[in-house]
Image 1 (cartoon, rainbow, N blue to C red):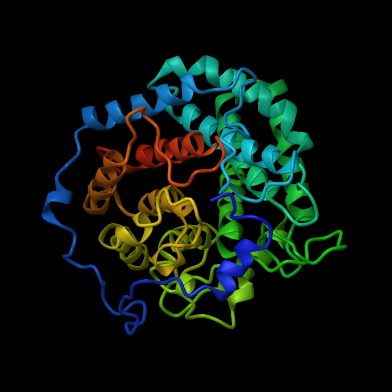
Image 2 (tube, rainbow, N blue to C red):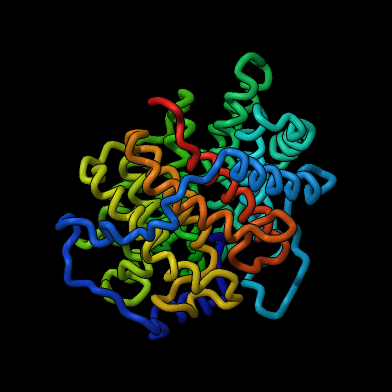
Length: 404
């Protein structure tokens, strides 16, 4: 999710890598039937009981409650192993902590009605975010990790809006912070629209890096959530981000990792196996903002892929070196991809969700750690709380409502 390797290594790995150690059929154009139809194993179709799901969620909540920092945030720049990513201090860690804390906060706010023991932790985290978010900036001219913090903070602020809708003073604070995030994301927009998280062209005040498809999708989903509460993001910035994602869309329904790879569309990371988590985010972002090509059949096909071809994501999970797995998949795409897949699932009629929700739920439950957390990529001390935040948000969307 948040980024990769030491300075320069990420770009070198992506641009020159031939690390794909597998292959998959690429001849079928998107929309000609479902490549995974009837391939979901029967054992994975067994319903998951509400008790089993709630028990896993409870353990995840307990992890977040017992690992919250004293100031209300989650994560820290500890566990400084030799393989940790390039992270200019202190700004990179401000971004990592904000993105991580926002995900954990969003998850706890969603769980609070059923699990009121979350309330004290939520109140502490909200106070921390209100204090610290206005000061979030990029780490330096190279590392623009703060875009993750701005995006996930918007999602947390959307939930804070719902939580404090009867408190005008608190809503004013939330509104001001949302407007500020719009301003910051405008300031850090890539030159051709959308957002990236590295800029290796020194000396530019405005980022000159190319758009990264899934970063743009992340921001657009956050824009959608606050727009649903009446906060309208800058229209020109939103339209430019959509256009950037569409430029990176391929005929097979996958998306380029970033626009700088447009001349290498068959690079492993740009093929369906490498796009498995990324396509979920891009699909839902485009769907939210009215793109009619993201139909229910397209959503179903990529959810089927997420189940049947989950190994392409899973093989990269917990690997400490990004993009070393088949199709150059990095570990931090695992829970990211499942979260945005769960948003896609909610676009389907309730009657059509179970065939995807039950297998996807089982994948989540099987990967929960003994301490109740979920994690997919070792990132200092941020990976367990951000992975757990993603997983809780995901499982909450895998629930099957009794009625429409």
